[in-house]
Length: 374
Image 1 (cartoon, rainbow, N blue to C red):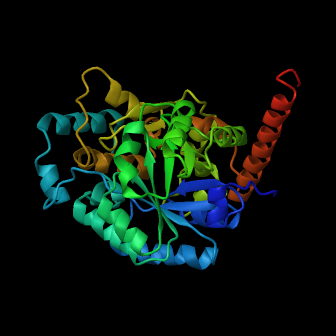
Image 2: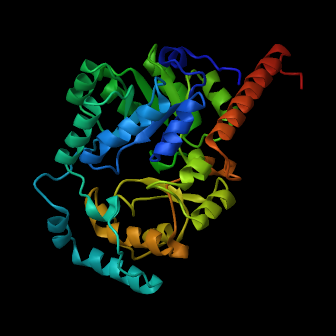
Image 3: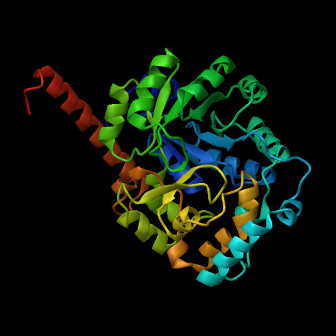
């Protein structure tokens, strides 16, 4: 594949400015080995599990760089346990969850997952951060929240540090912290997302960032969008949803079932919705009865993170474990419209690179013809 050189990609030593976020080790490794930069999301990993997982990634990518994504949201309770939080949940919310169980005949889960066994606390996040500090990961991105102390400690260990933002306000708050890059994530993105569209946000942040590298995120699943992001001044693209349908995502702890894969392939750009029902923060997902239930008249207002998580964790685990079809869902961005078949990560990156080159050439041809050529 012909490289797409950008200054940030060259600094990192990667051939393609494609940054792939995933909770799958296999996907992360495959992205790195195909010329991009895989970013492993540690949000679901207890601190004690992280060192072995990062060591496995390093063993499989060799000297190629890879990254990690960490969340450090503010306002999390300290001194609480999952059990104590559950004991104090509002009765009306507990009753609402029971009505969901009854309506969809959802049995109690028989296994423990991140959703029904972990409470997000400052101690939990600090443990994850310490695991990253002790690792040889090359790049760290903060998906939600960050502190000046965390950035300083990571920089002291030689890490390249950045953050995902959804608004100019976020950039202004992070500007004094000395970040190495910014991911401008538009509202089209899957997972936790804001309200400003990618096409507006990216050039706005590029202008504000001056010389700081900006990566574009939010609904990106086609190389023409990467070409457009480069034209707007971004030095790469950050993709998440695209990897869910790859062969590499079919195994491991975060494998998706066949029905969810079918939903992703069948979905168009209009088949996602933003809900607070899963985590307490706005999250874009594939539409399902889960998103509809929390948007229905009479539904209680979702609790804040991590209390909503404590409320719904058992049900989310059971939906996946027992394949409760109407409720099956996954975080996914509007770029899911480009998810049309299962393929390997290498095949996907090859397609994205070809499309990007085509898009850049088309733009140059149009510009060179004064807008009259075809």
